[in-house]
Image 1 (cartoon, helix red, strand yellow):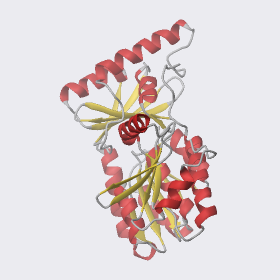
Image 2 (cartoon, rainbow, N blue to C red; image 1 turned 180 degrees about the vertical axis):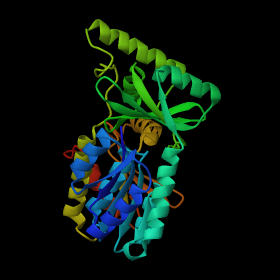
Image 3 (cartoon, rainbow, N blue to C red; image 1 turned 180 degrees about the horizontal axis):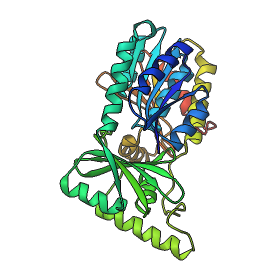
Image 4 (cartoon, rainbow, N blue to C red; image 1 turned 45 degrees about the horizontal axis):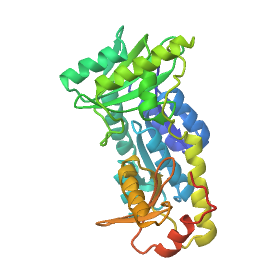
Length: 345
């Protein structure tokens, strides 16, 4: 399977420049120009995308939100953005996600070459492993306490997924744009695979509970159950836990929230960032317990201030977080999200 560099909404001059640089890198890497957001998500599900280069032009909020959304779905993809105007708040939000942003006039050919070579070198320094199952290979990595990203291709049907490992510990998995334990179980059940080992792991927080042995045992149990139903190992497992929201469902949630805020505030105010944050789950549970004790009813929205970080948290199937500035219209925003008739998730 070829790895790709995706170019989104770029003018012909930059497209030509990137093409020239990539041609000198290697045959295993190709480039593709995509102008539609849905098509870009589809390509990222189908191929391993090493690098996304995107033109944010005048930093339309929808374009910014999409880049942040893509980063959450495909954290292994390096994102480089450039724009005509860059605010300090935007730069801070993107760099917090390790997304590089440049002023359009300052993005030189030399700088672009440096970025592309850096990303592709990390890929080219790795290599393919064949004739070993994901479970067996993971146990070797755990024993050696390696840090790496495994890009795994199932041979029979050509499905592909990614496992993230840090110091021998399985951090998370991704399959078809969905992350979490369900994706890990699916991948661990594959038998005939090709594994590309890329050294390094972009994740900082563990999103999969339990040690590797427990995850493997649970995957094997699910595999046995599905085989008794007449399903083969390449088919989607029937798992006992709810799946994470799909990228389409997530986009719908974001759109509802941003549309409602735009109705109320227009261009006067908007959040700095919007995204899902699994790490806020324990905090939500604690606040809900306090609410129950006080007889305050179910939790609809919370505002958390941690140092210089200000966050509006909206509970749901997955926790939605809005990063806001210190001067945001707190009372009005909290009233909007505490409304009974607004099903955000």
